[in-house]
Length: 175
Image (cartoon, rainbow, N blue to C red):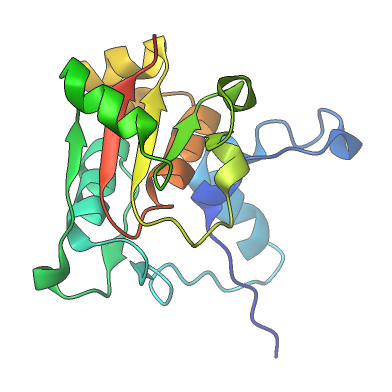
């Protein structure tokens, strides 16, 4: 017997080797799973559903706003903050804090050291607090409570960015 594990929503990078053959493979989780079920694989969506990294508060935000079912193994008393920051002074402090990684939708490197792209942070497990910079479209969706309507690749990259935090998650609109 073999056990394969993974997180459907953390797929962020497509390889050019597939061409257009699998271009929409990660757009629909049900279709994705059906592809493997047809080949005899058993799908388990519960064993690894609980995060050891993210607090329940962060997991609830992801479930409620991105439509991605995730929970936490951490104690409720170990909750962290997830908040949108629009106060200029707090923004300046967050941006100046070198201990907080700043994650951008794209072109994060042009902002200098400590800035990365959402998807580029995949696999990183050492960040305490994370500052997620929201591009224009994502900021609009957040305001109206419809982050779940983002294109699948954008939503999945945002999920990756948010789940890098062991501590607090701060959202700031990119200028």
